Structure formats: C-alpha cells, structure tokens
Image (cartoon, rainbow, N blue to C red):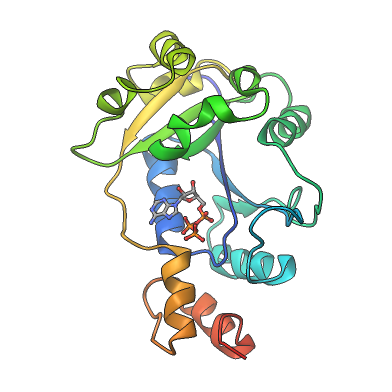
Length: 220
Ligand code: ATP
C-alpha cells in the first residue's frame, strides 16, 4: 500500500507539551505514518522571540521524545536567526527524502485557514500533503465556507476522503483528521511557571524536571 508517510510538526515548542505529543500520536496512528519529525523553529530577530533559548527548546524536545522511536527531532530550523519560510524547510526535506516519499505537514485548522498568507503557499502542495487537525464537532468544511477564495479552491480540488490517500503519492492532498485536542498550550505552561504554579501532567515528567531545574520560565 505505497510508502508510509512521514509527518512534520513545526512549532516553537517553548516548551513542548502533551498537546503536541498527543497530536503526533494521533496523526501517526490515524494516517499509519512511519514517523513524525518535530521541527523547532529558529529565532528570527523581528518576530516575537521564544522565552527559552534554541538550545533549551531543543533539549526539551529531545527529552520529551527520548523513548519514542517513531518520533524524532529535526534541527534544520532551530539555530537559524534569519526568517525561515516553511516552503524552504519543505524544499530541504524533499531533497533529503527524495521524490517518492510521502510527506505530511500537520496543521491545526486555524493555521490552515491562513495558509494563503504564507510565502509561495501554492508551492507547499508540490512538496507535501497537508493533514489538518479539526476538533470533533467543528468540521473544517464549515470554516472553509468563509475562507479565502483561492484557498477554498485548493481545498475543494485536493481534499481526500481518507488518510489512505496519503500513501498513494508524495504530495498534493489535504486530509482532515478528527482529533480530541487537549486544552494545553505553551503559553499557559509559561504563565504557570511565572506564577510558581505546578505544571505536572501538562508535559512529560522529564520536561517538567528540566524546566524546574534550569528555572527556564521562572521570573528572575
Ligand atoms: P504558544 O502557546 O506559545 O503559542 P503552542 O502551545 O500553541 O505555543 P506551538 O509550539 O506554537 O505550541 O505549536 C506547534 C504546533 O502544535 C501548532 O501547529 C499548534 O497548533 C499545535 N498545538 C499546540 N497546542 C496543541 C494542543 N493542545 N493540541 C494539539 N495541537 C496543538
């Protein structure tokens, strides 16, 4: 049944948390992926900078993924200090994995609805499939009714009925996955740390320990 896809999850991971890990696990299972690569973003000077350093964010991702052999960390963006477009990262992943390997960019529905604002967004479909995560009871189809016209057109043309489609070609399809999302955000974890509140069970024990021991988000 074709080649098992590789999932791609980009983010600041400031810090990585159980919402990210659960998202990756659901995508892995529902789409029968061979692996999910976590790609921590760089720190371009003109965007809102992450609180933790690139090294600390990378350490936390590595720590969280330690015992999951289907999850890996990809360092191609994290040390970059120039603006880094998704299309460039995807081009470099495509060069690394070759023309046959299905790649799947994992995106929340909010990010997907803004896809038309990305640099060279139409090229994204030449490089990867897109797996959109929709919350149960909030189908992407409804939100698409008021979306940008060009995005709507791409969605209509590319929407696949089932994840099986992701195994049949290297790029170009859109699949919407239903996923119960955990109500966890990195912002909330940072806020709790700043207020000296406990963050146990929002991220892994090892990441919790790392944050506490290095006092990453504790006010000075
Ligand atoms: P912040 O609160 O700092 O904005 P975040 O928690 O949203 O961070 P990011 O590193 O920006 O984390 O997210 C990376 C990716 O993971 C994004 O596509 C985001 O939509 C997704 N994501 C974040 N939180 C969750 C969650 N609780 N469940 C599923 N996906 C999530």
